[in-house]
Image 1: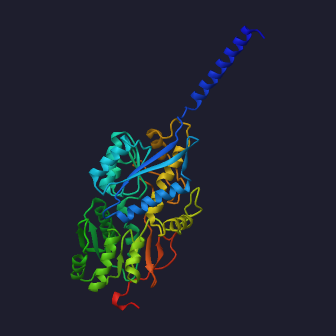
Image 2 (image 1 turned 135 degrees about the horizontal axis):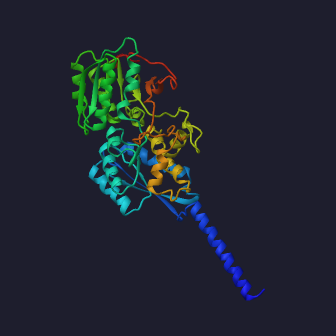
Length: 418
């Protein structure tokens, strides 16, 4: 073969190869090799939300362990990296840290903090940089109104709906409750809880005899319980606060001999510290929770919620609250949407936003994932439970599809229990 012929064939081969490469590039955009996917977050690791923040942090860690520290980015394996700061439950601090995560740490996926004002502060910075966040720490409608959908996706249902199933359920009991006292924390999301509880109670003809608004740093519930006692016959006490408020409320009811027909301890009675502290005093107390191990949800790693709960318990030596399943689901969702590289860089915020918004009941241990146009997860309501037995255990009362027991109502006086 002559040198001229060889040169022609070489040019033909190179031209064909370049043409093929161009066609591939047109058909499927090239994705830069990424050795690491960097997740960034801040949490109130110190202060009143310290305990619940630990649950979130452990859940992120469990997801990382579950995936073996690696995820697929458009079909290419990458290591998982986390940067988590303590925002001290301060909005200004959260904004500063979010700026650092984006500008200095160069994180790829932003995970939300805990608390309404801090979530909003984080979202404001993310919006400035046209980034997205995914959060499970603020149920307030303010998130939907200010940053929902275009900046932030929310894995927890709206706070207004939290009390609905519990009050609907209690309104059916015999004798029907006629009066209710509400303990409200001086925070927008808890005020939304209370507004929902008031509206639900009034819908059933239940009179609100007291709506006690307490500072967020409240430690002493005795003045509040004394007010409830002076209010006369109160059939339901509804706590919108967190686990510490629930504990203090019940302790003071015991000490002051305040015995309503029902006490709703709120959304954190399943936090292990509540039972550890109250022990048998938790018997007969109602609660609400977004998630329980006996639910039948699953994902690609766990066959059901109990398997997830067992793994969490074995790894961290405490039972997971609903926060664990919810927090675990955040990186799990990111993992799902960045796996496909057919539209370009899967870690581009515009592409992630589009794919998250398009999720249609993605299976997860948190439940089916689908968002409305405000970026809020679609959910039917918050299940109702009651702690029963001398070594109190959870019995689910509502909705009917999840129920595994019946009420013990009205509750006996604290000083007349065996």
